[in-house]
Length: 313
Image (cartoon, rainbow, N blue to C red):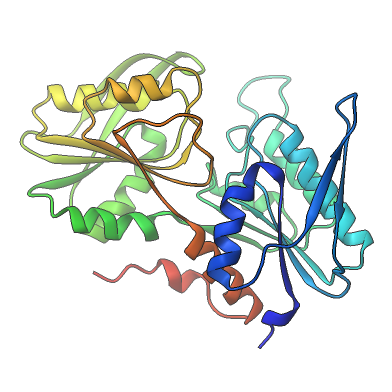
């Protein structure tokens, strides 16, 4: 067994999740500190010996940019402290929506971040529900892209909905909705949207029949909640019996919480990859910590990770 050489550390903004992961794994969270200087500059350091160890650094890279910089500095510090392997565990991989050149003279930020992580010294990356699967190809190191569906499937099944059907809030999520529908043996519908500009939906149409159905909207990110609440209204207006949403990354920018609270949703189920700034009675959080702990064990023992996501009906 190789568990004795594992050390788990956390960036400041993801300590809440890292504590649960290390507890689920069965070891104490490693000791590290961040020294903050008066001008805003900071320094990361490990407060225990990590020479020859496999270091798992848990840190999401949601804004502000300090979270990404802190992760890069922790990676560099681990490399200089002679860690054997450095595995970045990024529950929410920020800037993943900038995965292509969609207009002239823009950066492909997710590729830039891949370069930064690799140059800093990462030997493996573990994340969950990347916004775009092709981001894995930006790395020349192993990338494990996990799926929150392994957590959501059981929850949806236990709801015992009378007439369930999956739905995607936009055409980009068609593949995700189809995979849920296949696993849970249901149909699926699609909401087709046209944007006036980023985060602003101009118009939306429903493709499919939801009359008398219990609709489950699935998505990877809820940002302002504008798209998904409009999709819920459209679905409800077309005769749906109930509408729920399942989303991995609850960014919840701006008025997102207010929109959800005032929406037609029966509930919105999310994971803890991003800490909630506010709460709503309609929001339920499911922990990813046991999944991360199991994946870390499998990485250490050279066991299959993909088998975790082969849903058995």
